[in-house]
Amino acid sequence: MKRFEMTIWGARGSIPAPAEPNVCFGSDTSCVELRCGDRVVVLDAGTGIVGCGRRLYEERIHDIDILLTHCHFDHIIGLPFVIPLYKDHVSARIFAGHLEGDATCQEMVEGFMCPPYFPVKPKQFAARIDYRDFRPPDVLDLGGGIAARTVRLNHPNGAVGYRIDFDGRSLCYITDTEHEPGKRDEAILDLIAGADVMIYDTTYTDEDFARYIGYGHSTWQEGVRLCRAGEVPRLILFHHDIMQTDERLTALEATARAEFAGAMVARTGLTLTVGEGGAPI
Ligand SMILES: [Zn+2]
Ligand SMILES: [Zn+2]
Image 1 (cartoon, rainbow, N blue to C red):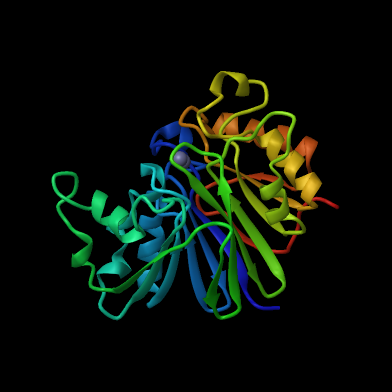
Image 2 (cartoon, rainbow, N blue to C red):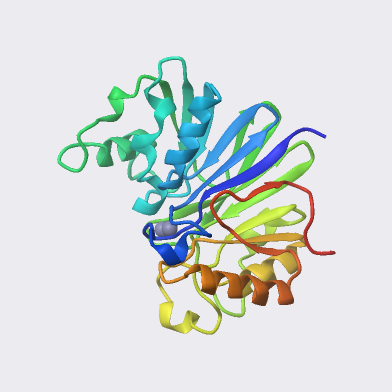
């Protein structure tokens, strides 16, 4: 069996949450690193990608695929601080599929890495950067036996969910998205069917969801329902609200596990082998 691992580098949503009550689950925003054999795929470029980039630099990784769900700040703000992007021996591909023709991925990156918002422009990246645009449900062939299936998510300004298939196993990354109560999103269900792991936007709970209609996020209970319907044994609760302290997230994990044995709450530093563990299906 080939190496297929995921590591969480940032699990927060909306904004980093650096505070003493959050040290266990971490404060950084969305970033997940995948190791597929000797290849590296990074999902989102929130503040978590800063630590991820440092690690990749130390390991002398020189080829990186970065798949963006969308370009809200919490998913891109770390991109200007990825050390390997400033090294001329590195090749990187940056994918975006949520822009729907309004802009290209390159224009989007140039749009936020520019004065007066930021002093360094992307042309100062020394790495060879290949910006790739797509439209869901395109399937992205990342080479090396890695394929990324894509799905359009229900989120203000758009977002894209991914399913990474490698070595006969699959991990799905579904954030940020809002579900319709009482109705499964058929496109998401089709994407996740039979996968081993789903990382899911669990910003809210069913109990408080009515107050947040239109915010573009979902609940851990909807994640459980999707995992059951799609026969996915492992659910990773992700995109934690700033108010979710270690104490609350620990309690949430116990509650979610009582409902679905394969539930885990994402925390910075969590590493899992895709295909191991989870709930009996
Ligand atoms: Zn977000
Ligand atoms: Zn968002």
